[in-house]
Length: 220
Image (cartoon, rainbow, N blue to C red; front, side, top):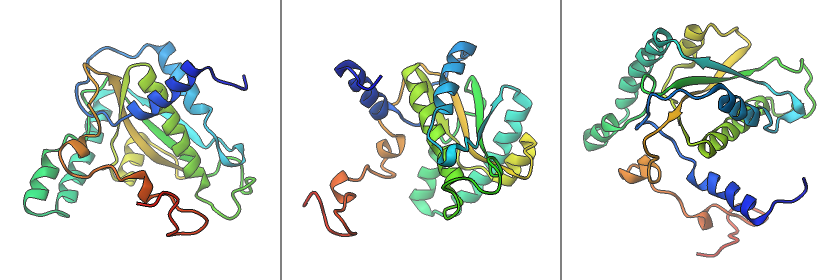
């Protein structure tokens, strides 16, 4: 339990490197419940401050609900397009930013901001640690899904208030991630935003500091 074989270690790093946002190439094959349970178990074993475990998982199979979410996405996408002009705007509108209806399953990961009571150990100073903890669960879910051959796409262009209304969330629960999940015919070869020239991956050497900001560990 305290060590990994070389093959196991390589598998962990492989999942991390190959994890990516999937928005296209979904197939209609349903995700078996036992596999979905394994993925959710991995998510549920994420670290959380004060062991608060603030996450819940809403599985969305109903097409009518998905269509309402898609309508909300389209409204926000069109609004977001106004941030750009010219070719940048055209490129933005051409991007595939969701797979809400195409994917086998939609899943919303929420954060219960009241879980653990008013005084959660370790949360007294940084109140948003419940949100950070939920993001750890999302990453676990993403990595586990990739090892199962299941693509995951995070639809972030959604108004939280509208999504909360559509999903009937209580006031103390907030949506953190709306995910499209499903088997795909092929996984993308690297991030789409990098492929189309929207942004490039930054060199790690520019992001590592030693002892204080600006003191480089890896001189350029």
